[in-house]
Length: 521
Image 1 (cartoon, rainbow, N blue to C red):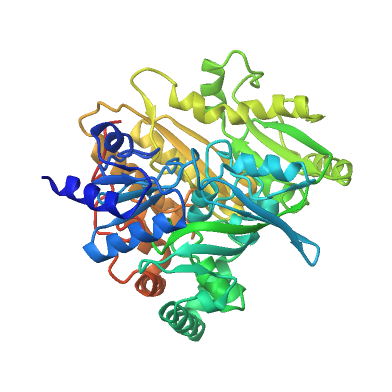
Image 2: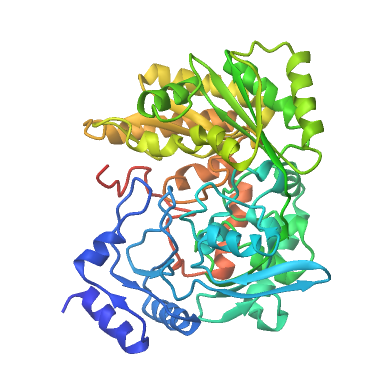
């Protein structure tokens, strides 16, 4: 009997939930939305918390790596693993809304990790509420994965990432303890003592404290969420917030309580078209100072690629760079006027008239071009693929134009067509180069692209991932972003929660190369 079969049989005796080891299932879970392929030994579909506890304890006792997986939409390879895959998916049953209440007038909703983000939004909208952290992939992404990757979205400019709305978590530790971070009595002493010591160490380190303070308003999802050590004040908050962005390396999330906010009625969107990308980036700096909800950018390459494939959309003509600005609330009319004034005062050479629309249908028409980017690139042309390599970088908005200029020079030198788009108001860009998947030098080319682009990112003290989270795609570059001093504290956090490194190894730290485990692309 194979080792995989032995593990499946042993787990089957411990739990009543599905334990799958057939080729079809293992092949299905050997990929996610990344460039990697890793086949697990067995896939377990837990039905309740007791299943999670049993599987985690088995993995600990047997010394088998365990990978928690949600929707599998991660582009950095964090939803893959060689050992036991613990999949909490949208098919359920750990996909429910557990409860809704208000504490001192603050609406809160408790959910399980398999709940689809947009399903929660529909539930909240019926109550006049919403979750302001709204990733663009909300139709397919699961809330457990959103927490594990520190997801945000286009409205992070105004509303921040999901950690801002997290009240408390329930999670299972590597020892199989069920922890509720709202209940200090449930916190294992080893974790509380370790986290308190970690906080003391960080606060006593002037350089570490300065680094965290300088970056705490930046949109980033790289490394562990050490920001909690300077933002929050209670042990339960520190213990729970460290799991945000941890991509399953510190514990298995089984419930979360999130703060909701009143839904703001009345929205509008402005379309600006620029002849110069540099001017578009300069405009972002001025417009983001206003209380707008979102500022999205699409460069002229992106617009041209969409125009070639999507004749059904109203794509702007000519070689233009686009900004989309969204407003919400009764103050939107004043904001629209302020945006128009700033455009006029700075003398930008627009490629067309300023277009502002209200109403869901009219706004959806403007946003349709932005929403079409990734689907269009994924099916752009036979023999070419928009691979996820450097697809989630971030820099300070004041350096956006310089950074884009450097990036364009990199791809021009390599002879690669690249689409540049993203959440410009937060300095968060999605770079999607088009590759020939059959090129014999593809691995070396991928490495060269990543090395060159991340070198540019880090010259501007940017981040290798602003919202998509960590994974195999980024582990080689994490020390370059944070430095050895901060890496020491991040490894200290891992040691506190998972000293044997069994929870999702290789997706936060690792010695592997970027193109190890490269799958068929």
